[in-house]
Image (cartoon, rainbow, N blue to C red):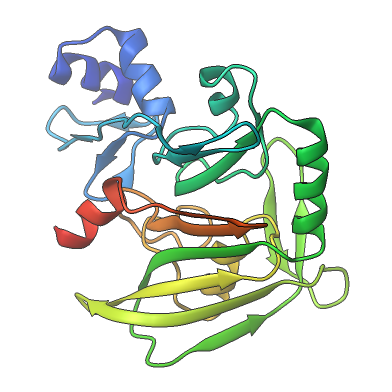
Length: 242
């Protein structure tokens, strides 16, 4: 038995520092459970190392940059990678899909106003545990507690309005692939709302705690002003086919 980063460094023939980096990025799993650098494991523990994909440009003009963000990639790191561009929205580190940036301050103010007034169309794909036979609109207020790590909960007294519409697309191994449309944009809204109806997202290690190689949540489409961006790339599709 030893620390996970030491076991990984031996198995992959890499330095302890590199092993810690991969573990901290959330790229190492064992039987669908994410392994942390501080975990103590056996040298016989099977380890699966995920590949960190690169962000891909979907569209760019003088106002907006649409990126297909891979899972395990921090949204704020896009500002470093695409110098001069700043985020218009963000996705959880484990969530993949369309994310938007801009260079224009006036445009950014207009976009913030569109989000505030719920005029931005946001469509996701999610693979959830269990069978959902029909469309559901989840209207449950959310309270977010922010600290070193933000976490949300359903709170009918103090929570802010949060609306999520889910549409079942197909069944995959007794799980349901959903189209998810969010009218509001609370922290962890989709993850919390789906867990609240007993259908957590596969790979969600915060709310549903359903082991999987990644969080099966993907930002598929965003429409704002006269723009519409779709993402059909990335590992989300690979996992649906496996």
